[in-house]
View 1 (tube, rainbow, N blue to C red):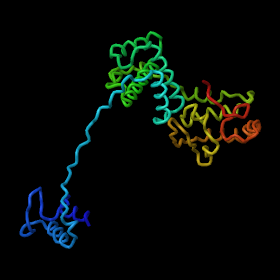
View 2: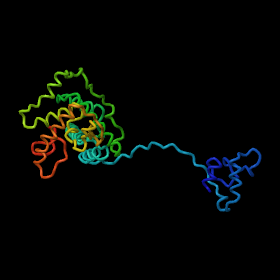
View 3: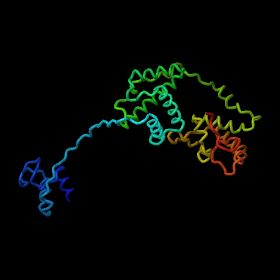
View 4: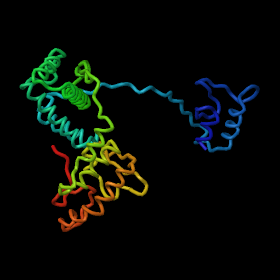
Length: 294
């Protein structure tokens, strides 16, 4: 009943005699119809409810409260380990991405040489980029290092170690300096027929190449394919990408034929190498999951 009164008088729960903090008396004349109904309804309520007068609380906009800086800041090793756990647990990044960020962060800590992270200036961070250039790293690797430092500083902001993220001021590297070359259709055909029947597991290798070409998936995604993920009759497979994200990718006729021949003629012998039947699509010579080269 209180909720009904609150709605009827336009957001204010009153005893029927107040509006905008001013007493208006009995509801007569030009009083709104909803207000009249609420007043009449309130007359039948117990006195303990009718005499309630609650003022409307205006909606306040949330204020941005800066994080409180942590005194001392903790050891850099502790924050580095916590940041890696944050990437793996909360950000749910792929293991390969986490491993790359771990290497980049270790190189950043090596360059820092004991200097406090909150004491670093934008000039120091620019020197870090120049230091990366001096080690002859590729532009893509330098760009990833910058992203790693940005994310690390952003995490330190969330934890109250840093107030400002100076790494946001670092410019990104120019990655594409030339137009990449592409293979001609003839070269693609030669590439697909590269596995020779004279090789011991040429059907598996040809199936691998056909699936890679048909789906455009990463080598790690093809390596993690399960038998239940491949639907040859429907012509598609389910790939598990970074962050455990899933997507459906089509399989062409040649890819379906190559995988079917591998499943019928080579995979049973590879699976027999293990006591328990493996669930992976592509198997190594020992019957384990075929892993991409490091």
